[in-house]
Image (tube, one colour):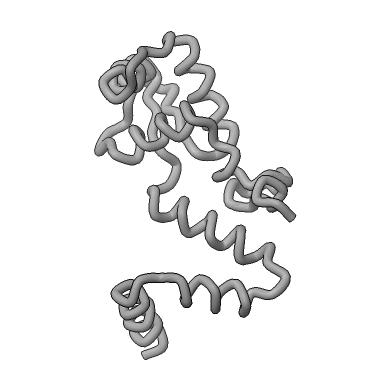
Length: 139
C-alpha cells in the first residue's frame, strides 16, 4: 500500500485517502499560516500573508476555494457569524501530525517492525525524549 492509498481517519471520515499526503502546495501553505496565527484570519488576510511568503499573490477566489476544500476535509473551521468570514485551523499542527502518525501506524501490517525501524532511525536526543515520555506515562 502506498502512502497515498493509506486510509484517512483523522477527519472522522474514512475517505480512503491519506489526507496529509494529499494536501496540495497551496493547501499546505494556507494551513501553515493558520497554524502560525494566534487569531482567526479572513480570506483577504490569508491572501496577503501568502503574498509575503511566496513570489506571487493568489486570487481571492483561489484562496476562498482552497479554504472551502480545507473546511470540507476537516482541517479548517469557518466562522460565518462575522463578515468577512474568519477561518482557523481545526486542530493544532502537533495534533494533526499525531493523527497522521496514528493513521500510518494503524495501517501497518506489522506495527512492531514499523516502530522498531522508526525508533532505530531517530536521533539519540529524540530517543531519550521518547524514553522519558514513556516512563512518565507509565508512572
